Length: 406
Image (cartoon, rainbow, N blue to C red; front, top):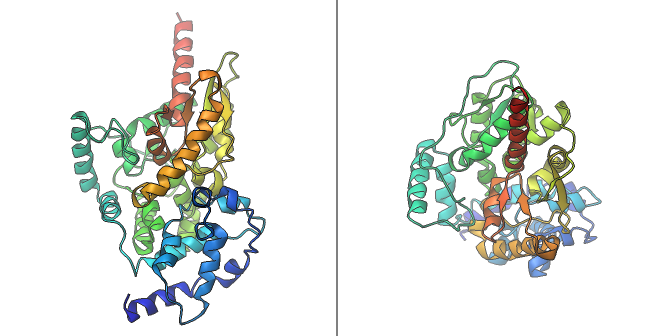
């Protein structure tokens, strides 16, 4: 590392908020909730260990070794430590700012750089989607931890016409291109409750979450500004991806403008919005048992995971995992950049699934984030978005109502 590069990095890292760093009292209550610490037992792979390393920046002679950089790069950014922390340490902000600083001293893995470039270019994404669809039909890429099976060859077009009072479903980039059936399920569920909803469409594009998590702050800021400018200025913004929802809700903090803050105030996870605005159907007597896996950015960042249970409960019996929301290891681009760690963390989640699958049962699993779904499907479990399951049941109710008319 050149002296100039090292100086630039130090300047960036010196901007870390001292009060935030000093809020950590090294109590260790975060350790059981940190997936990288759980699989390594290494303090450098824990929140308090990473904070201790961040504090070492205090000297101008600070030299960020490969070991120091590796400690920061291997954080999944699940923010489970924030939920467990009694001192309210804003670890998410600390690690995000640290990764932004690191972007000046090391290059991301080639696969990650290519992926992030594609997400920011709708035409490239359309071409990549078509190519992946062809390869999957030929038998390749069907068991990937970061590309879902059944990627459609052509991108589906959703309704984008919007009135001033209608909510808008944010469709993003990868979800609209690779898992459009999740948006279809969301639209069917919302229609059941009588909601006329439009979609953001490919003109709005990517929210920038993966870019921000990778330290590409300037890129994520531009993408956030584009989303805000391209979206309607009124009405609720509904999101059915936990990672996208968390990012959109934090635009106000990211950009620091009144316009961004007003936008973030209009953002709701779709389960959150349904649960708070509609009377749910009566609970059925015979119900399928469904395992709920909470995406980290729904549980720890948005604190909206309980709404998934509220929306599902009339139709299914909820089976809780015994791991208190431990990360599955997907972590945006983490499963690509840190494949070995991501695989080891996924094994912990698989063990939690096996623990609830007693007497040979193999329950379906739901998770409200496409990255979690794709990452966990590799283990052989049937995993769907919660609204895919809800859509199945509301369709049955709608069909029963239609039959009752005759």
